[in-house]
Length: 171
Image (cartoon, rainbow, N blue to C red; front, side, top):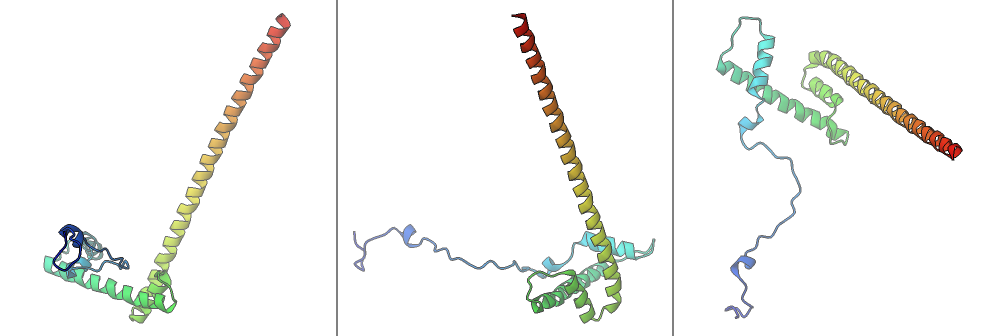
């Protein structure tokens, strides 16, 4: 059967089959402004730690601090990203964040951030060394167990050989 244009008839489903296009993967952007906010539980914990005992904060004030913190994080990230791009890198590093703090005129935070970074690095190094020691100990125990099994196998073989020798002598 031919269509009215002289072309062979095709079913509508195949004629309308979707054409899949390859799209470059882009990071998903926030669909709503609220998606950019930091988690309320985190903000609440930070506020409680910063305030003296017995001081309360209204929901409205907590919400304002949350929005301000989110804007600060986004701005700091954007500034740090600019430093990474200047360095022709796609990954932000601690130096980029410290440079961003200086550029944003938060120099007084740079020294405490550097100290926190050093503490973090020492902790990570300690964890890595502890993991290495644990792995070495596990390997050592595994080798000891393997040696014991080999010795047990050797002992069994020697006993069998002795029995065979005794049987040959008896015969």
